[in-house]
Length: 465
Image 1: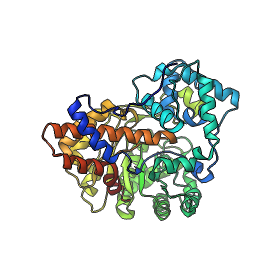
Image 2: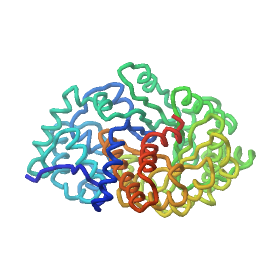
Image 3: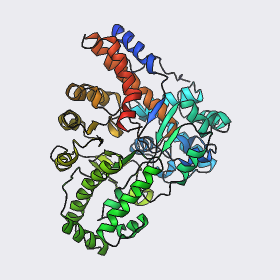
Image 4: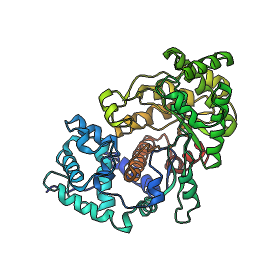
């Protein structure tokens, strides 16, 4: 069997002199607490603290990074249990065998890097997964999942997560978060995030019924706005620090009150046109920025994704199952109405993400380099890999500097990948800063200060923790 190891200098620069610098920098931040202000872990697993059911439900089923690569290799999503809860042992083992037997499909991807780190550091795996050892690895991991040391809360403490944000529907009562905050056994701050997309997209099927979940008098536009404002205040009172928005574009052109009321009535009647629905959603994105100026929630925006690209997969398995695909996006013109009004508003924070890599250097960095409100979100989703993170480091900091970055964002549903993702970021940042020191663009003490800030201080500042 091939051995599975993680090299202590992985991802650090190949040049020995620069690597020594990077190693010193990385060592100084390696064990700092994790700050995760944007992610998708279900808070119920921490509240209930029940053992993870099996390796498949932990590593495969919830992680579309994994399932999409296996699906591209010809493995049906149904065989992986996508869209299901924990499966029976026979099916769970069969799915695990598919992963191990197709381990080569992960080569060269960040998924492979995270997996190696998780298997070695958390579960003590010493053999590279393969068809031959799949069952033995399943048994090794499964046995540990049944131990107190590998229950969710124990892992939360072991991972050193100081702050963990979840993603939540505005109509959620947040009872799970309240219970976690009141539990003395949970020292990590677990905060909800206000995610209003489905209430702003008035042209989507089922929107007239969905909007009633907000409460209040949503039979007219003013009542709808008031209901959103009230739900935001509720989230703030229950620990939320940010509101997250992910639409097809970044348009923010406001409507006049009469036009907004007219389109809203048509949406309730089910007669709204696609053009009207887009105009209304762009108007409401502007309104969300206004509300953030009033209630203090950090606004995060990540446009430019074609959601649910494969209709048959969406119909069978639902959203977030691996077939959201990046598209080109424009921010400079689209955000001008919002930034004209709120870009210099005291205390307003707008964190911009993209899956269009050229946008980081061409638009986000210049915007963050002028507007006090704007911060460049970390590379994420399709860009959270060493190559694209390197492009981001060089392209964004040259224009905006380090103080305009958000700090690392893991954006994951896969709980056990959180430390691996943050460690990857720390190593890459250490390598980049070591290069600046080696090129005599920074002194080593400045590189230490910058790296420590990126890991801890910057996300706390940007997300107002």
